[in-house]
Image (cartoon, rainbow, N blue to C red; front, side):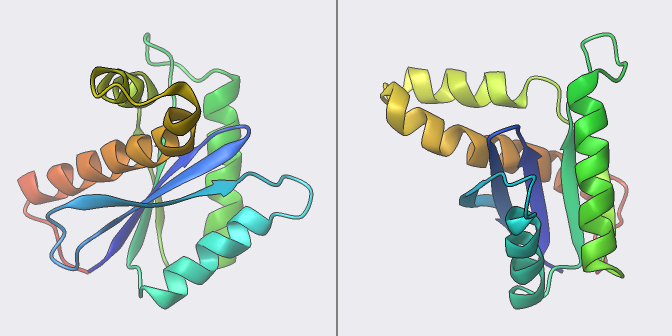
Length: 145
């Protein structure tokens, strides 16, 4: 089934989606983060419904030592709020150490200007999060929806 990948930031939320076979993650959109009205969570819920998503993978930005800092705690809170909104669709946390760094490096290598880079780096980070989840499920032989 179709899966969604989410990269949660303080300002933006990057979103990626998989094909129904769970092979490839592609970028979808960057949403404005809205802690006051949770409009971003509503937009994600609409995507989950429209695309018949079977699972959402939210990036967990742990420290290099593997512990939770403020960003990881914020991602856990976001994932919990999203899970409550889209139940019974499961929300899983996926280690996302360095995905934004990796995305910025790819865009810099492609000489994407800074302003344009900010618009897509969150989507590319979401692609990395989701692709990692898809690869994990495939290696475990568990890509059922």
